[in-house]
Amino acid sequence: MSALGEPTSSTIARAVPRARLSLPRLGTLAKIAWVSFAYLFLLAPMIVVMGSSLDGTEVYSKVMFPPERLSLQWYERIPDAHYRALALSLGLAAAVSLGACLLGIPAALGVVRGRFPGKSLLLAFFRAPMQIPAVVTGVAFLKLYYLVGDVTGLFLNATFAGLYLGHLFVAVPYVIGTVVSVLQRFNSRLEEAALSMGAGPWRTFRRVTLPTIMPGVHAGALYAFMVSFADVPISMFLTAPGFVTYPVELFFGIETDFNPSVLASASLVIVFSLLLLLAVQRVIGLDNVVRSK
Amino acid sequence: MNIRWDRLLIPSFIVSFVLLTASQVIFLRGSLFEDLGMGRLSQVMSLDNYVLLFTDEFYLRSLWLTVKVSALATLFTLMLGFPVAYVIARMRSRWAMVMLAGVVVSSFVTIVIKVYGLMVIFSADGWINRFLQGAGLTDSPYTIIGTQSGVVVGLMQFTMGFSVLLLYSVVRTIPMSLEEAATVHGANRLRVFRRVIVPLSLPGVIVGALMMFNMCMGAFTSASLLGGGRVLTLPVLIQRSVILETKYGMGATLAAVLLVSVVLINLISIYALRRFKTARLVIA
Image (cartoon, rainbow over all chains, first blue to last red; front, side):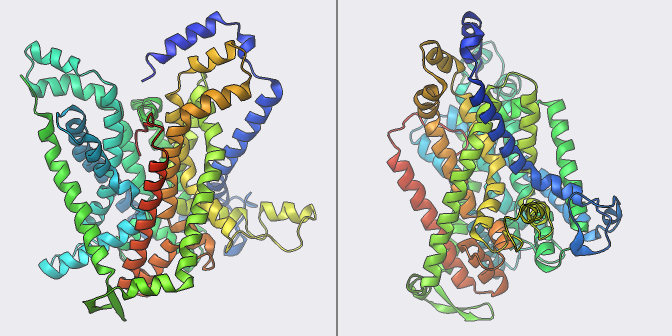
């Protein structure tokens, strides 16, 4: 992406004395303070959740941060329903991520490489689900499933398939967006070269196109996973008691009665997310994933 | 030999088209039926729900409130998020990776967990209140539950991680060399910011801001949990009428009004900003 930008900039940086580029000290301090504040804002709720989950008090309402007496008691009391909901959320997010890639990659290739008019209109169409408020998507799919159920007798609400379609609907545009942006930077002459050297279309795709768009695919898959894994407004309408995703389970947990074991299971999720990111960083490089956007 | 790329489009197009039109058409049609109570709907199509909505000040105020908290949350998120995105994008050390990871983790974790955190932070004997009372700034504990500012903070928590990632990708598209060139020719930091960074990132920032605004308009988690039943935004009303009151007709009507408002606001903004032709943000 900045393959062209960076070498030039560092050459200039070398040619120009560093001192002229450095900022006045006060400005730097203000910048550091502002960014630290932003990070405090961003991370404090999660740190507090993790910290207070270790609190050892026996009284629900007295759980606080920093914890007064360390204990893992709330971890032992995580209800089974949380684990079940978490398993559903993880399976769903993984499946949504995969499905969004299967639909999104060909769509992106078709839009960028195909020769036909009205491409920007088509892209706008593919991105439409991102503009629809999530709560509206939830209601719309619920109504759709009621109607389909009335007509065919096949009720999709509170089924994995129903939940899956709703999540897929909002996840696909992310994959299309990231892959399109990679493709637009990528020279199609590489493909033409491969083809003219005798590689078949499938071989060209596998050996030339796919490796090039991979950063975009990774980014899109990560976004799709994120969107599905964290969603409340859509899942709220498409789940039912006994069949809920993790965020919805937590949502009702807050609304009905506050039990600190929620903090414990939430901490497990935060730690899991960190580990997942660590794995992404090891295997693909977080940098590549985020930059390819 | 030529690859027929356009054919690849067909399956995705069909799936997207069916899901989009089927869901939207059916719910928009559903908004035309009056509720008879107990989840039953009238058989006759009418605009009664819409008439009720636009003549009842309660619903209109709710719409205005939704737009207001979403706009405020977007604005504050931009103010807080842009410098972070800028700093990470321009960092040359390995710490950039760590800072980026912090942002990504935050967007991975569902807003419900963050709301729990906010509740603990702002609880009556939590940190902030002990500090405020210790410093003699307040007598009674300050709470964000049930206040609009609480909802705005919740929405910011919801969009912040995502917005930093978006803005990061925007800043990365501005070559560092342009800023350096401006500096070499004598511009100070403020001038570089005003004349180079702002104009070049503005199109992307605006598209990103619209995305955050859309996210806020569709979110009810923060408003529902932090609003404590007193900050009734449209998404909260929609969730209540569908899930609690089983008023599917009115729920659909509210959803339709929300959808149309969002689409209109997006169209107007994009139209007003058409002159920034260079706007090319990847994901929006």
